[in-house]
Length: 147
Image 1 (cartoon, rainbow, N blue to C red):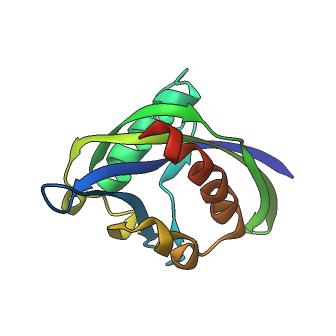
Image 2: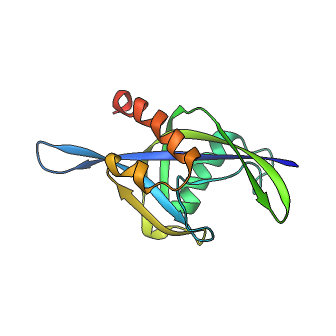
């Protein structure tokens, strides 16, 4: 058994619909290997020794989606098990609610085959995994107070 720690983000942006109205959009991505729809995340310290959770979350969002975000609030960590090459791994993911700063989703890296901005009401049905859906439920509660 092995332990793995990752960090990532639930990124939102305000989008102007008309002169009088704006809407919120949420960033989701489809993984190139397992093809599941997820929030972007990556292993803490796999690229930069001593990198913290927050720095990893911001870096991974940028690498995987092409988007730069600003951390607004830490969300509750999620844990799950998976098996890789016959080894059981317990993974803990630290997610952060982030506000979009800049970037273009067409500049995502190879780890994601698709990256999209979608309406909040579409997010739960789009997400593939229970852990991402749990994070989304918590993020929704904080979104109204953050915008």
